[in-house]
Image 1 (cartoon, one colour):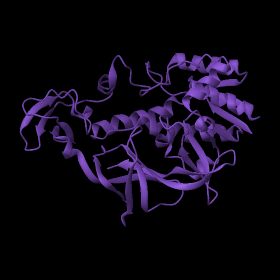
Image 2 (cartoon, one colour):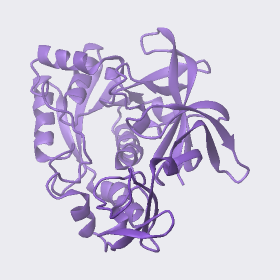
Image 3 (tube, helix red, strand yellow):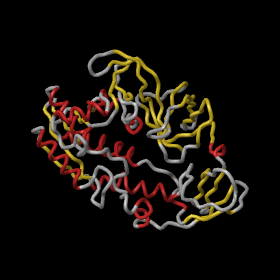
Length: 359
C-alpha cells in the first residue's frame, strides 16, 4: 500500500514509519504545520518539524510539510477559546484528531492517491465479529491513547493504521535506538501545543478574549475568595484558589460564568451518579446497556449503564458515584468484544464503542 505517515518529530511516529517500511509499504512522511505561533511544549515547534525531517531522511523516506494553520485555527483554536468563555473545559487534542489528523489529513491523503494514513498513537485497530474495525486499547496500558481517538468511526478506520499500538513504549524506544534514530531518547510531548510553559493558558486566552474576575463562594453562598478570571477555573480544581477560612479540602464543584461565581465544597460534593452527553460519535450503531467508561485521558475506567433518551441525549449512569465531569470534557465508552488483531491473532479486547462531550 501507499501509506502517508504522519511524522510529528517524536519517537513514536518515527518508529511507525520504520515499521511500515518493514511491512513492505510505500511510505511517505508528512508533518502537519498547525500552529504558527510560539510553541515550546507540544508537537508544533520548529524543532519538531526539523526532527521529523531528519528522521525521514534517516529512513530514506520522502518528507513533506502540509500547512493546515487555517483549519487548526477554525476547528481547534477558536472552539478552545469559545469553550472557556462559556465555562466549558475543552480537550483540544481530541478535536485535533477529530478535525485535522483524521479528517483534513485523511481527505488530503485520499486526494493524493494514498491508501491509508498512519500515526504513532498508542492504540490498536482491531476487527470485531461483524467485520468492522474498531479502536482497541494499546498494548502499553500506561500509554494507551484510545481515549483521544474515540471520534474515529469504522468508516475512517478502513484507511487508518496504528502500527505501534501492539508495542510498549520501551520497545518503541529500543527499536528507535537500534535504527540510530535521533528521536530515540526524545521526551514525550505532554502539553497543549499552542500553550507555552512560560506564559500559560491565561496569557494565551487574554490575547484572544476578555476574561472576567469572579467571586468564590462555599456551598451556603458565603464568599471565601476571588479569582482573576472565572473562565480559567475548572470543575475539580483545588490549587490556586487561595481560599479564606474553613477547614478541610475544598474543590471547585461548580462554575457559573454568567454570574462570575465559582462554588467550592468538600470532595464528596463532586460525586455524581450520572453524566449526560451530547455531540455523540458511535463507532457503528448506538449502544445501550453495560459499558466501561473513561472520563479523562489518563483516568481509570469505571462500570456504567448507557441509557439512550428519546430526545437524542445519552445518559451514562455509573455503578458507583464518580467525580463530576466538567462540561466539554470527553467521555468515552468501551465494551469487551471478540477481536482479530492486524496479524490475525484472535483475542478479547476492550474496544471503543462511542463517546461524547459532557453537558
